[in-house]
Amino acid sequence: MHDNLIFLLCTAISYYIYCGGALKIGYTVLTPRSVNRLSSTIVFPINFSVLCLVAALELELIANWILFLIILSIEFLILFPSDKLGAFFLTLLCILCGMAVNLLLRAAFSLVLRIPLASFSPFDFLRVSSAVVGFMLTGLGLRWLSGSRYAASLARILRLRRHLPFLLWIMVVLFVSLTLHLLLYLRLDYSPLPKLWSLASCLFALLGLYWSLRYAARLSYLDHLHLQNTTLQKALAFRQVQEAQLAAASNQDALTGLPNRRAAQQTLTHWLEQDTPFALCLIDLDGLKQVNDVQGHNQGDQYILTVSQLLQHACRKDEDALFRFGGDEFILLFHNMTRDSARQRLESISEALAQTEANMPMAFSYGIALRQPNDTLDTIIQRADSQMYDMKHAHKSRQFEGRSKSE
Image (tube, rainbow, N blue to C red; front, side, top):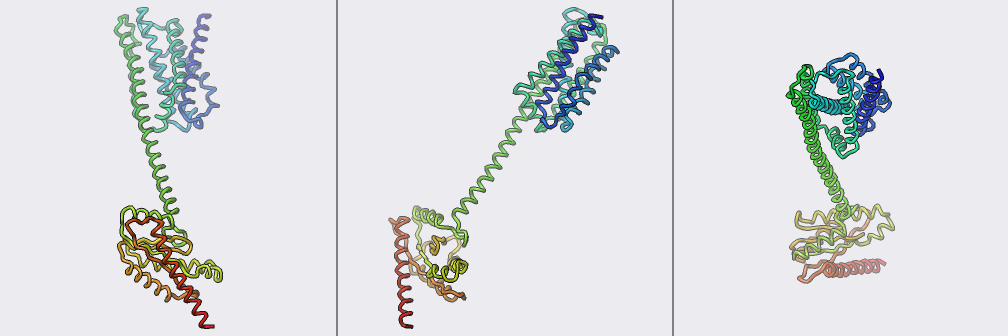
């Protein structure tokens, strides 16, 4: 009786370590929100009660392990209700490890002591020793696994799911093979062959489990890298779109929608570097400040929009370029055009502007500069600017003479 109590205490300690390792790997691999920790406190008492019951009933090993599988599956489904597939995976992992290690030790004991596999009684020292050592080694192994880098690999397999069905099929096949292998424990055979076969089967199950986990972990890691790469590509594409939008916004005038001063400088620099022949027209609106002061900025904006629309109509598609260069200034680049042709176009625009119905006077002054071999961005704009101011002064002089005559 005393020996039975000692055996029972040793078995309880080893089984507690085993249950603790199973729960720890579950808490580590599955997401914390899917864990019902309140229910985990009753796992060990229930499992140990079942262990004592099957020992008292002297059930066969096949019945024992199938019963353990059913009970542990139910417990894990309760503990991890939001991840049923993950719970079943953990059940198979813990059962396979515990079953293979226990049977491996039992076969080793029977081979060394030259006794049949079936000669272990429920409270026999050898059977208890193999169970105690087996559950203790399995529990410690599961605890080590939960704290190692392999736990992250298992969590990745459960999170990505792609290779989990393959892994579950392998684990089910290994469990069935070990269960069928337990038929050897029903015969009182003293020959070493069944024991060696038992050792080989258990080692095969453990190695098969290891390599299948390793294979699924590597494939899941590749999937993880592919997912990260896809996410980074999407983020990069989104950033490129944002940068393009910001670049477009930084190069675009908000009122007219035309390219702005910065875009004009970039285009001019490019055309000068490429030796592109063009005529630069610098256009300045006459009296815009007076319109803003007297009639308001809304009328001033309408003045700007009217001129910009007329200038856009004068541009040839895919050849010329129009920019809003400043508050009341535009730059119009006529590709491969002479001074006379450029002047004719601008005069036509000026006439169309004069005929536009509006409650304000609208006109513009302009200067034209043809590209010269040694031109820079500043020199060609300065030439056009000088001509534009000469025309503006001429317009002001005519306006002053007209007012003098009327007086």
